[in-house]
Amino acid sequence: MSYTVTIRDSKTGKEIECPVIEGTYGAPVIDTKQLYNELGMFTFDPGFMTTAACKSAITYLDGEQGILLHRGYPIEQLAENSNYLEVCYLLLYGELPTKAQFQDFRDDLNKRNLVHEHLERFYTGYRYDAHPMSILIGITGALSSYYHEALDINDPEDRELTAKRVIAKMPILAAHCYKHAMGHPFVYSRDDLGYVENFLNMMFSLPNRPYIPNRTAVRALDLLLILHADHEQNASTSTVRLSGSAEANPFACIAAGIVTLWGRAHGGANEAVLRMLGEIEDPKNIPTFIKRAKDKDDPFRLMGFGHRVYKNYDPRAKIIRKVCHDLLEEVDTVDQPLFDIAMQLEDIALKDEYFIERKLYPNVDFYSGIILKALGIPTAMYTVMFALARSAGWISQWLEMMEDPDFRIGRPRQLYIGKQTRDYVPMSRRKRR
Image 1 (cartoon, rainbow, N blue to C red):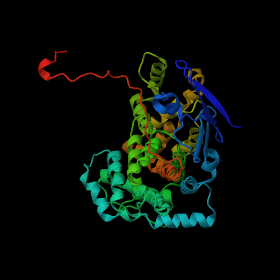
Image 2 (cartoon, rainbow, N blue to C red; image 1 turned 45 degrees about the vertical axis):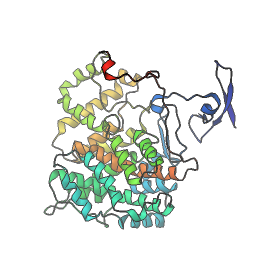
Image 3 (tube, helix red, strand yellow; image 1 turned 135 degrees about the vertical axis):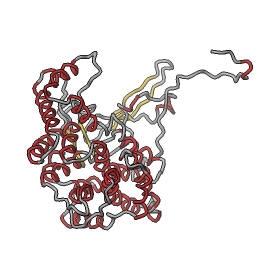
Image 4 (spheres, rainbow, N blue to C red; image 1 turned 60 degrees about the vertical axis):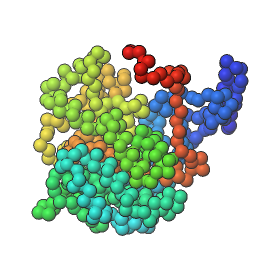
């Protein structure tokens, strides 16, 4: 059913009819494209909280109901039955692959799971203690220097090839960030290993010490990648789309997404969880920090609880909670007190009326930080892991945008509140302010 909304300028009495567009799910949107032409007005929406900047068929989330769908498939079903590589295929192509399609997809990625040897020398230009995200931003952007033959963004075959290159090469770039910090030799990708096993091997194997991953650890990381693969039009995804709207090359667009993800309010949340657990230091200190969290005059906040979008239990947190507990039971860790703090905080948040009433449930960042810590991944690498997972969503969103008939360069408007027009005054006549 189609209908319109009437917008009336009470100052002039002029009215326009704006079409209302309904999607498969979610709130209808008002098409305001003619608002400026007809009434000479823009909308004012800081943070774009009520603005739909694009049409998308990739991901749907309902924060009130705790629903997350990829191409129509509930995240719970994908987490239970799928793997990250299959989810990558789903995001890219819109359907789950047949067995033959999946094998072809994996073979295509294996053909591209090396990087140019010269690119690997770029790492030596960074200090050994440089933040891995700063390295990943530069190296990802540098990829565009090596694939001139397939960077025609108007060619569908070039776009698809670039998407496969992003998914195939991001684990290599991420693992090398870790190896550079450790001073260890880079490890080449192996075609005989699965996507997650291969990444862990590139991270942790040494020439004198092969790495044999724990199966629960592999499953935990695979699940983390699935849960972070895409999350609708968040800040980093919107950045990828905005960069792409200027017809920037796709590797630069992905690098722009990584820049945004590095923000503390976006991809740095799981790092903040570990810092908070370290600040609490001992389980006996938990009551003091809980009291501080409830004190509205205390700036302290419990990190990893609640979510900006989800006003219910984050569906991803429900999924990851069990594998987190399984991992902590199976993997030896040198920091058991930290995990004891985390589990006690979780128990309090799920039972304390203060947290329940405010829906401050443990979110995916709470559990992902703990899992990455248990896997032996340094805190500085946590956002890199997020970028690795989200790269599939970013490149899928970029592909969708490039195929959109409404494609055009992004150009947000503003509400100007500066000075009115005034005349230039020579320096000799200016009065001191």
